[in-house]
Image 1 (cartoon, rainbow, N blue to C red):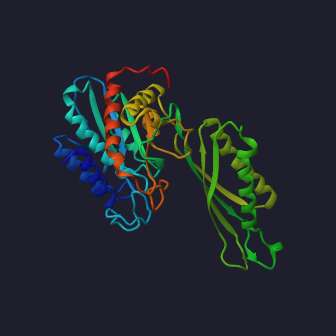
Image 2: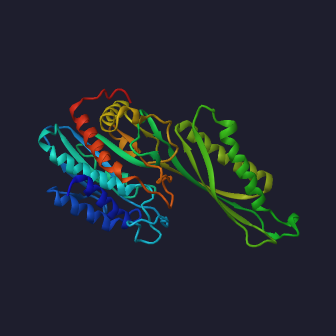
Length: 385
């Protein structure tokens, strides 16, 4: 079976059999089976996390990382490889990531005698669920003796064959917060005897949304979204308790810390004004993903060869989060985006209709191979971060 057909078939296998974060047991078994068939010796370093080395002729090692988990999404596509696990779907392309990395392994093995160093394949669980799988992979030796790391993410709305390169910041801090407001419930006909937390929560939402527009430098990137509000019992009861949950996305730690403080300042003001009590829990999530500029430039040259110079783009940073950032805090590397859309397939990542143009998969695997080999062959100027 030629490699192109192999990559498509294995991607469709993974798409049909998705598993949620930290529960990717069958997925990990299949990855190990495929690597073993290639003559490699995979190592399970966490319950579902795998590393596997391809040894060449040199001391440097480049790691290539794929995530392996799926999302709690009910698939709406009518395709032959539709998810067989109800309510679970590879809606972010991790099935394609695994397939392209396995394809890259086959391509690298074909060229093993010319490999000027070593390649480490990293199949990482739980990218979708903070604290994520990268931390445990690192703790258990995924980066031991590794000099550089690269990763590739497929994108459902970027045209197939386009490659998005980011020289520095690519993705944001991805934090979450929970706020509980405690007031005094009562009858809807007598608001004077109650402390209405829904009314107060509406003030909180309005005030929090002015932090970015009125307190953050407009040249700094920041997003605050409150995605959940839970309060109330029925139409004629004034709610005594409310819970709000939201996310903060920033590219700058000072901005991040200012927002954390300002949310609590607002809560303290509401406490004094309305005689409420509150609970405020803020969890810092994945850090800013910052690429090494020289590694990104090496990948860009490989992408020009693989996809053509006209297909290279340089977008602004994405305010999504990615735990690949943890690897880049340890060693130099870069992450980039590969387009997977066409005229008929064009849905955003995390959508129940997400799918990709499979014609791009072979070249995606080839780009991983060429990028890793180029990094082994060229000593980058790592002072340029």
